[in-house]
Image (cartoon, rainbow, N blue to C red):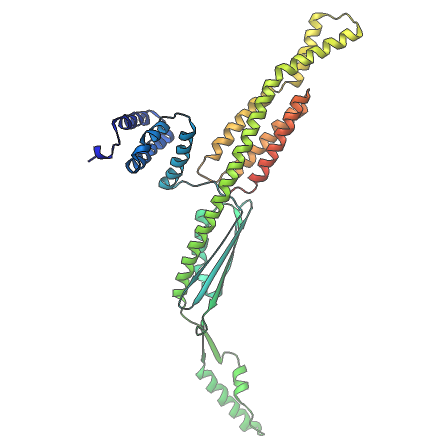
Length: 373
């Protein structure tokens, strides 16, 4: 039975290799490797011709096709393992649902906020469901200013309030009015309008809305799911932008690193040229000390190394299955700090231009990060 699932012997050997490697890898990589094996069997059982391509991806051969299957398997793994996607704090969702009593509508608006700020505006008969609604949001959202608007449009023949007459109070009022008339005399003019204006003569009792409350909870579940899906789509788009910008930062950092020997040599040549222009005898040892001092003043090696470390950390954080907005915000500050230092130490138009490009990319990242949960 098991052999029927194996497309061919070569693929089976690939799978055995993966299983052996899975035991040697750390927990996270092992989990991913095992998931790749599962997905490999799923795909290959339905598409035997793709089995070899899947296997090529699984052993890590970097090609355009393997990158495509990596994205495919990552998405499937996220669904199977219940992993979270990066979420934006800006989103909108609208849902409606019909019941025997009428139509319920829900609109949810979400914008960026440091913490979760939830506001719910709903009809009075849904107050008992507010705690359940808040639990839905607390379970799925950690940051953002979220505004919830629930409206009810009843059918024409539906009334959510029942009015009854307080017979006991009405009889007491009538008896008192007769007694007052007997005592004072005159025309007896106590009527319906006076009785209706008396407090608590008409009792308003809410109708049974338990069925409608269940429908409201169902509506909220759909609305929250719609909001989360919208936040994930927006978050994925932001993640793509951040990856693009962080690649620019990495490329510019490499450019500055490549420019440094050229910049250092240009500085030494400039100092020598100035001495030749002044036609002054200089102690070679003293000249070397001055050159070393000037090179140390413009050296950005440490800043470049820290930029590399921050870039690696940003890429790692972007793949975390948790809210990463605050962490990314801190990393952006560190990136900005290092780029400013590089700009202040710039001694060449080459490094100055690269530093400006760094700051532009970092600022664009900062604008995106402000909206990430």
